[in-house]
Image 1 (cartoon, rainbow, N blue to C red):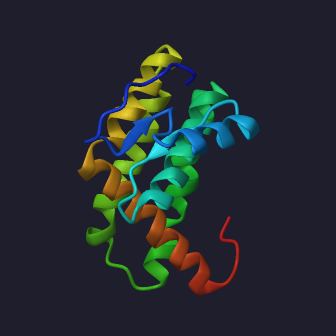
Image 2: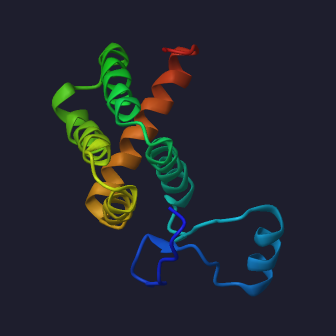
Image 3: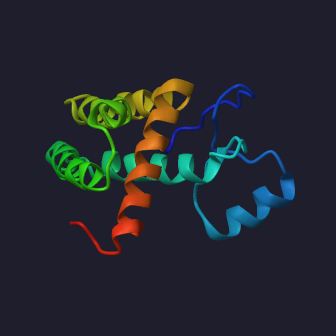
Length: 148
């Protein structure tokens, strides 16, 4: 996703440019591209989740995205084992799986990238995905081993 996205103050992902010129210069010295993320308490999780999806999208391999659906679905057993009610966490996992499937659809990569940006700029979808990442991470830490 190398295209430039315009800055929108209401967006959760506000584009490839930083708002601070000094930060822009420092980032440009180390990275060819970067994305600023709205600082709202979920920015670290949003950046992590977006980077995960973007890396999968850039792989250009739809089977890899669908493989992630299978791998993450298997982690639902972990959520069950630590006591989460399936009907509570399914809302979070469903958004993650739907976005992985939409991103894997045989579309040009720029269309997939646009769908990815749209999903992460939708507060409800983004928050559900972030919650899925948070819950899964906390469960792995609670159990104390690598589940996959």
